[in-house]
Picture 1 (cartoon, rainbow, N blue to C red):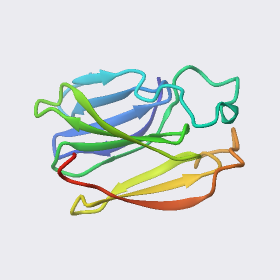
Picture 2: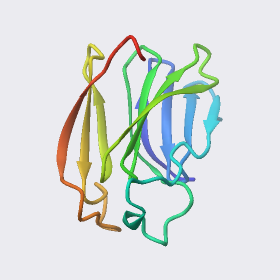
Picture 3: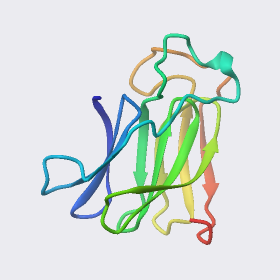
Picture 4: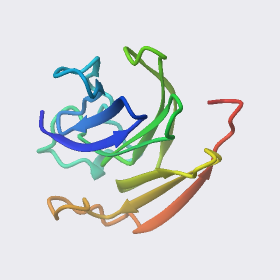
Length: 151
């Protein structure tokens, strides 16, 4: 799939999210991903009526964030889910930690520098176009407090 978002993990590694729902871990010195996770955001929703019939089985990755120089990553999709991930030290696997759910497109994700908070931009529409509108969603900025003992 086409890569729609990228986040730098450290000076040597990055993570990408694609329109086919996959997340990949990369080394800046390699041409191919070190790890590719297909179906990172399967079709789920609190309200099935919010899912247009024309959508594929997987929701594309609309946003990524990494807590720089750590193993903590976050991915968002337009099904309103935010998945938090832990990367292995070799960057050859992602471990799912937990999921946060909202209604709307997850248009942006940022960790606070200390890693205590995840800031999320949610919208009725995708940040790059008006392909679908989720009228029940609210355009908002959400702040989640993260418990470092559980991540």
